Structures are given as C-alpha cells and as structure tokens.
Image (tube, rainbow, N blue to C red; front, side, top):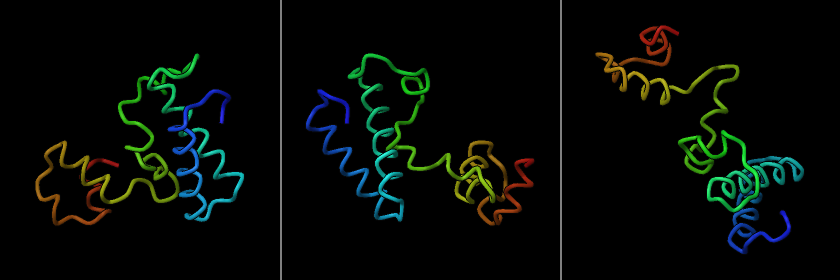
Length: 108
C-alpha cells in the first residue's frame, strides 16, 4: 500500500487480496490485483495525486464491474452479457435463445 493511505484503503486492500487468494490466485498476483483495485478507487475519489483517464472516467468502479472485462478471451462474453446487450437492443425472442443464437442475433 502507498504511504499515507487511509485505514479504509488498508482494509479494502486486505479484503481484495484475500478474495483473490480464495479464487486460487498466487500471493504475488493477489497483491497485484488488490493494489490495482485500491489505487483505482483512490484515483476515482480524488485521494491520489495523479490518475489515468480510465481511472476517473470509467462509468463503473472496479468493484461494480466484477471481472466483466475478463470474459473477452477464448469463449468471448458470457450468455448473461450477450442477453443484456440483446435486451438493450430490444431483440425479439431473446429469452428463449441460447448463447450461440444470441451471438448470431447480435451479429457477432
């Protein structure tokens, strides 16, 4: 944790680190995830001297996002993410579609 960080951020760091370890991440990776998460939250709330544009302008905080972006790998977005997109685009019959059908309806 950076010098001068608040007790709240210390607790947040420990909580995120422990959660990552419970999910099977290594100690090193858990520390990295926790540090990045806390630093982004500090930037969003104006507690840090410098902040990247994505830290301050991303509409969702790291805790709200909850790994959404991690689903762009081998199998792409989850069925739930595809369904939410179909809902926004008001695609008919989306509730009875499977993942592949949702992909086709969305033009992916």
